[in-house]
Length: 269
Image 1 (cartoon, rainbow, N blue to C red):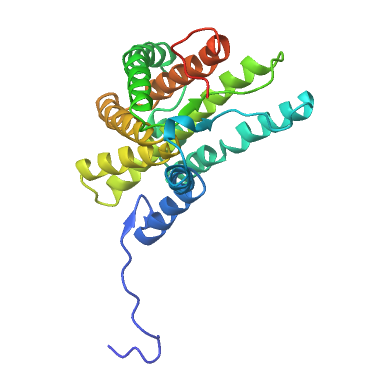
Image 2: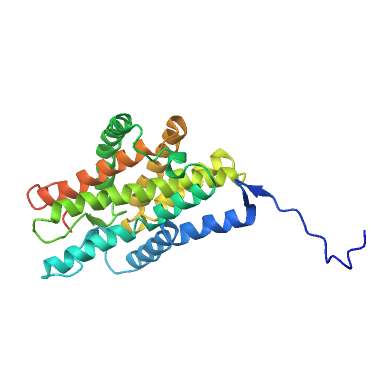
């Protein structure tokens, strides 16, 4: 066939979910780049800084939920709510991409309110199992010098403190479980990754963006990532994982706020 009049022959493009494969790869990379992939790089840099700093890791602190405007409570509240809201933008992006795929948005990964009681019940059981063991792992890792002292919150004692901590926990759970479990596993599967490779990628990514806490934070969260992927594959829903993660973080954040300085076993940094 003479192509001189029509130009070069057009190569066929493999499509996945109605999208060219290369665009799906770019989409996945960009979602991670504006969310937890970037957090993983930031955590790695922070970890390098911690291990190269004089003194042991346990003598350093990893601070979460800190004041953004000390001494100015209303401005501080505005910054807290701004940070929580903008951190959920990647979840909105995932919802958009799944809608564009005609997969039903977040319902495609089981992140909806259709099974609230079941999701909450399963999530509570998972949180009870992981929460206690996670605390013991953290205390052991810190005692061995493999972890920084994690300070879950250092907000001022003001009326909005506990509600903001609860919202922060819910934001963390939505972002992590939607992006690192539901979305990432769906995309990697569509791109031909094996179940084992997808599980490893999800778990290692979860561990990586917790490296700022130290080796213990990386290892504990990687193990949690394996468990969460297996549960997601069993239940087919992100909802129970969101509930479990939110409950774990709420207990950690609010519990620290109520107990710090009042019990001997809880490191305060």
